[in-house]
Length: 272
Image 1: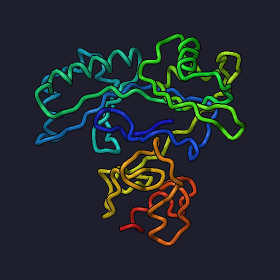
Image 2: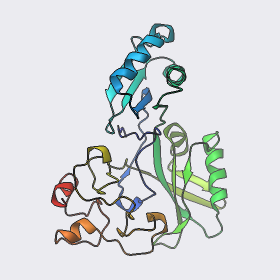
Image 3: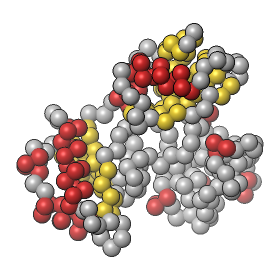
């Protein structure tokens, strides 16, 4: 369940829902650490930012001097991982102090929250998105704040299904029994595997935009058909992989999907 690719706003670099290419997994693995992310922009580098942070923040006072590790994220930023007792509270305090120190500088501090995606299927024709959200709130015992929900779509069996993304702690409460009562229906819950790293420049899997050395630039193109002017959620075209098409492979699939012949890491070299 773990992934390192945080964007500058502290969220994962993912587009809209694409469950057809995501595998299923049986349970949710909750992290035993809390994270704070730092992304530097403008003229300030990470060495300068860390030096400034060390001069202005006393980790001893925050009681995290022996409970914090620093590592590099896949997008080039820094991740401060805090573990141990009261980790969430301590991470919140560290983020607050870092934001205060860098309030006038181009240093972005965030508290990313691990998210889980799952599909609710077997919905009858009368069920609305509002009813689904109310059922999620009832089952989790908390507001649906920080969650996302797709639209109800007809599945092959004629029943409705809907994509959900929410904080993993909330999802763990919802997905415990793999069933949820919505209206008159007992709907099924399927937990989705984490999506692979995806480059928003060349659309290949396995790396992110800042590490991409491909000369191909597909930014702004649809993940499903490869055309410009719309996103995958609004696409009504057939799946078309421009990378496989250009290299003479079967191309009736989405770029970087499980059926993509170019694989993950090789794609950016073959499409230069």
